Image (tube, rainbow, N blue to C red; front, side):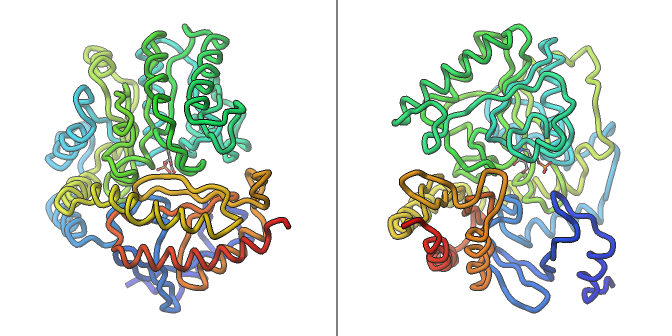
Length: 443
Ligand code: PLP
């Protein structure tokens, strides 16, 4: 048995953590988790409004999925990717069924960043072009190319290599780059801007445009109606591959299996990870459209991973998708957005001057916290944090709520099957914690 009592001490001695100044962190030790709740080593329970890193879409320890992993482990823990395997074949069948017509093949990876890497490689080989366009307000993963394609500040320290990555401004009315005052204006001007970027970069050099269908960590900004269709049309006009990054927005998060499905568009490649099996075993992948798949019918695809389509991860995906369908979790996420999160967060925004804007859908919501509602000055600077944000989050945690935080934003991203009373309890805590943010508002 592993000694639970030494978890913190050994972590501090030997574990090197992601995205952190190692001497400045004090990781909470989690000893148990169930549904939407986690427990620390002092036995305190926390309602998980983060789904960890927005991946436990079915909550923790779903019994059907745990049993499926156990059964697969007993039958066949692992097998190399060159063999066929029932768990992998069925996972691929289910994922392509959910993605819709014309997206019929899956290349499996270990997570989201490598899915993005491979989607871009496929687009480059398919088009014979190099450049990749992505938005500033985006996150596409931590590996070298994926972090260069990323727009958010996690790119800055590694922004020194991948040739041909170009950033542009996506639509975001609250902080419009285009001086727009309506969603229609924002949509039209964002498309016009993208059209100009394409023209100035040389359409014949551009392999792909990669977009989070609903940008996640960068702020949960559902695109205005018509924007993704406009991108699709631009890509078609110039032979550019449209990659939908659904790593965070996919698998029910927004109340649809994939978020692009809200907008009536068909991407050429779809990257996924996280919610595909709620992160119970690492898994990601690329769903591939017919013409791109055909490029590699008689020409070897130059890429692979030792664990591509790992049976434990794929068995977890099959069971997760099954449980989500059986329990109507995607429909529940949509309902939660309409009946619980949408109305309650709107009330919270009305009551708190620190809440500049609330936006989202399904179980995918952001609160934009500001020092001044008139100027919209953020409560923490872009790429940074502040005492006001830290104190607000500490107030929520003290009452047993784990909120997802990024710069000046709090995201409400719980499991899709969170019970209504749990959702209301978490929102009550958030409501009270926001009085701390209010005390930092100017005037
Ligand atoms: N793409 C998006 C939209 C993401 O949100 C993330 C992770 O948060 C990634 C890619 C990278 O996924 P991973 O951390 O599994 O490599």
